[in-house]
Image 1 (tube, one colour):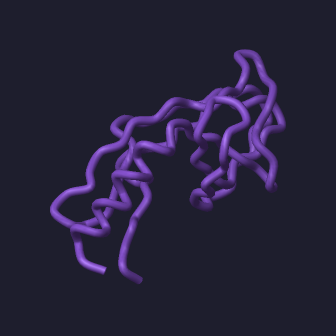
Image 2 (cartoon, rainbow, N blue to C red):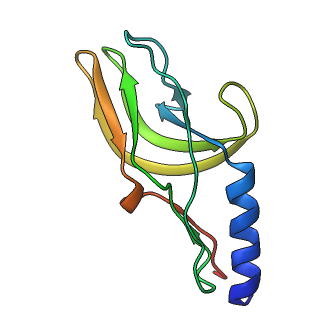
Image 3 (spheres, rainbow, N blue to C red):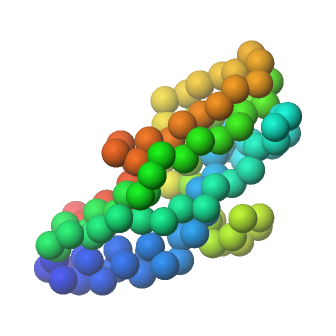
Length: 114
């Protein structure tokens, strides 16, 4: 598909994917104090037919003691909603309460012709 089509699909994805969630071992992270919560996301791009969108800013999540992070997923809502999938992350395990920063510069969705 050409760049105009890829950008069209990317822009539709930007509109639909409004929140980012973190998962560990196939389950969304929960708990903690302060408590874990999904984060609202806005997206950059796409630019000139590249089909790539990225969060406009880093997203910082609170992670509970014993929490595991190994994936992010895009959703249509702050709770429940449609799970559009996401990307595998390097696994991190938290022994105490902590934070996880999903960096905008290295996170994104690439709509491509492959």
